[in-house]
Image 1 (tube, rainbow, N blue to C red):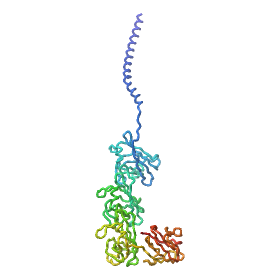
Image 2 (tube, rainbow, N blue to C red; image 1 turned 90 degrees about the horizontal axis):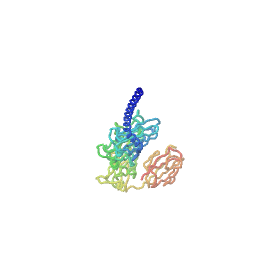
Image 3 (tube, rainbow, N blue to C red; image 1 turned 120 degrees about the vertical axis):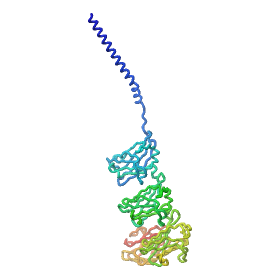
Length: 532
């Protein structure tokens, strides 16, 4: 009995101990469970929330032009995102497979160059694409979408990380973006006849301009300084603006235009009205040698012009033309072009009142004709005494032109002709024979056994050719070459004669250039320039 009592007491004691331990365990874990309940419900609540996707609010696309011979070009898309971030998406064509092309937004224009403002994710050569999302520039400066649109910058895309100096694509952005407005000026050849080209000014969004000079036939590895000068090329003047040098390998120069060298504002609109001209020089050490030149701004030529014949004077071997060309500002470029002038000579020239037969005093002084080239150019805006004279007024002026042998011999007239209201139709006659099958030979009207000369004929004038060229039919053509397919017959009688007379009264609609040719021999040929 006593043993049963002891066993019961021991069992009861153990049960109490276990019950106490269980209650402690239950209390501890209940507390933990109560603590994590809010997190369980919170987590369940988050799983039910809708996350809004980032969307595009606004965008602007800029063009990236190819650089070099890689053929890579494309676009840069600037994006304003709904989460207050910005993105730039580059999308290029013709990128090489497996390539990676670093890209950056730079300060300033591409023509000026500048430091990196923002590094972009590299463009994959496989896809030609990259996307960069950001809220600030590399230096930590915050930037907004509008700030991007107003940014003074450009984008460069490079060939590779190892070849950062090699660009494959480039484009101005923000305020430097080019508009659709541009102006092209011709740059004529100067000391090097083969070199000529254009200067194109492109208007930027901010009113500045990108000036692109493009020349043909520049020497390899050459560097050609260029400037805008004051006044017209015929007058000459001081340097007003300096271009970046023209690369001889490409013939191209690009310069941002926003101010003259003295700091004066000089944007696209100011350029259009500027009284200036462009000179391109052979090199920095040979600035006196011009390779190309052209008037710009208000000095641009309209295309309206008239030419008058300058006949031989006291020297039987010198003759030519004087041409009046209208400028936008209604002043006139006067160009004398003579053949037969002696090398090293300098021939003074003047416009006189009245006609050749009457004679009269000088009313306009012209720049002398260079004997080496036979050319003299003068800007005419006023008569002697200062009275303004326009191109239109010169067309009806009662005047004539004298070109003299030299300053020391003004009494010897080498060329002379009526102009304006005194100019009448020409009537000239030439005797034409041949020298075998190599050339036509012309005599008369100042020509003496002249071999295949070129002519300048005036619309409305009549020219007679007395032909004696057996076996060599003489044709006036509109295309230089043998045969009869390109004969020009307007105003022509007797075309193709070998022993007869050909008469040519130049019609008002005659083309600016015609030719005379033998039907059978290409060496028997010359050019006929037609003027008003």
